[in-house]
Picture 1 (tube, rainbow, N blue to C red):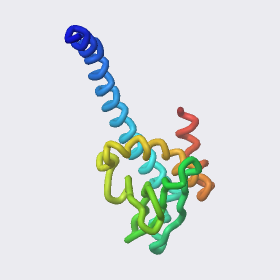
Picture 2 (picture 1 turned 90 degrees about the vertical axis):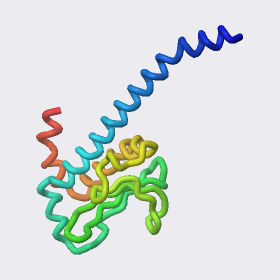
Picture 3 (picture 1 turned 180 degrees about the vertical axis):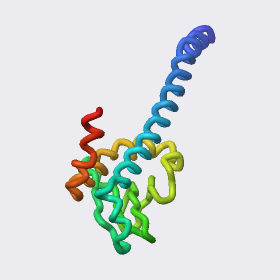
Length: 143
């Protein structure tokens, strides 16, 4: 029995290490993509002016797949902030905020969830600000 266990561990140990390395690489990539997409969208000329508006919530977008997740776009202290949250809008648990954290501040277990909901953020931004599609078109064309 001991030989069987040793064989099993020896056979799959390398795969486990490869999965850890691949997983770490994927998490790092997702973190970069979260930062790049959010900062790119918030920096677009048709959006940047919103930071000059009074403090308010511009919109809240809930995931259609799971209503417990969503994005909030708000203005506070002259800053435009995009936040990804879980739970009730009154007492949300913030997983990501463009104000307080880079994606490196997202807990490891939340990175994939935030990344999976980037489409919701971009879609709601384009829906709310139609000029954004025009501003993003050169990037889309280059893809």
